[in-house]
Length: 414
Ligand code: HH2
Image 1 (cartoon, rainbow, N blue to C red):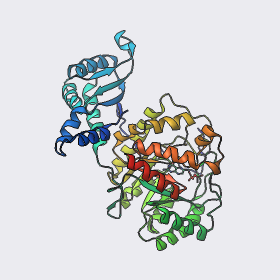
Image 2: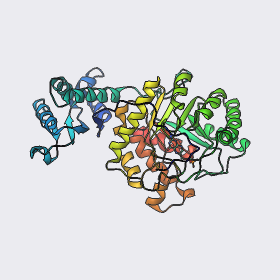
Image 3: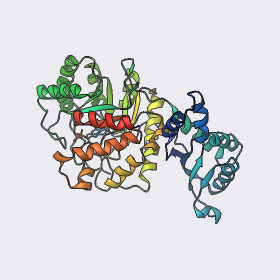
Image 4: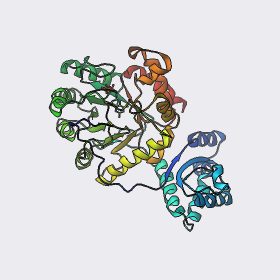
């Protein structure tokens, strides 16, 4: 994909790629815990029983065919199961993808046994342990010493676009006073974070210079900081040269649609300033990203690529409370890819960080329903509700009031 000369694109520091791609495909733990409590099992008894009942599917890519056959034997011996392609029983060599089925307890026995096995299975045991540990880690996003997700099932991130060309509200809030009023309204309607963007990333958009981005952004940021001293403010930028003055002007966190790929200085800047960072998945540039997006297995590839970005952020010093992951709905993806990512959003839980999703008013809703951009609120609410039920903690939205009601009801169900 061609990169415009004025955007510094980097792949970041060299990263030790993991050999296996392990992620969960099914999360029913909460339902099981609730069923046990409803049955009258004591609070102390629930974790013990839930662990035994907690059937979990793990998707594992990168197995050697011989290793896959051993893995199946080991998993059967602890009472679990492994689904393998027929090629393994026909002794066809080559990389194998498997589906593992077992309870937490069975996975516990499996990883112990795998440590003594050949064909890379020792490494797989470490990957499975990491995946299970990260799934269980509490989700946190810490701003000024406070975990914004504490005691909450979801957080609404309200969008304030200070741009002439954003796909749904371009030009509406280019005047700083209008943008500040809009931000105040979103806060009053129930936003838990405001996300300020001064460069559109819609498909086909042209990049803007650092100077222009700062010229649009900083007055609005300063105005909102004064008007709403306690409101967490995020800045949607890919550039360290914009993020640094934004953090000086009162921004609390950075939202990077390139996941740290466009500017090698952005992740280290956030680490140095202790600013939380949203790592979003995308491929290529907004200008060209929708020309021919293509995946063999979108969910698996997005998990693996986000993991690479996450490992780079961790290597730079960011960690729990400071990283949020986002599959990048509408970024270098076809409608079917976007839908698969919501359907299997729980796969991202292996990364161990809160999941953000932003489907608000996007093209996939138009592709599904024929609705024009100004009439996509019902579709947005449906997709964000589905995302919440699949494990998203933060929803990035234009219409806060409607989401506050819809998501409160959806969250009450779970
Ligand atoms: N989507 C947009 C912009 N920033 N950031 C994250 N983390 N996730 C998203 O899905 C996301 C994002 C695009 O929406 P919008 O800001 O309304 O449009 P534009 O980029 O045209 O300003």
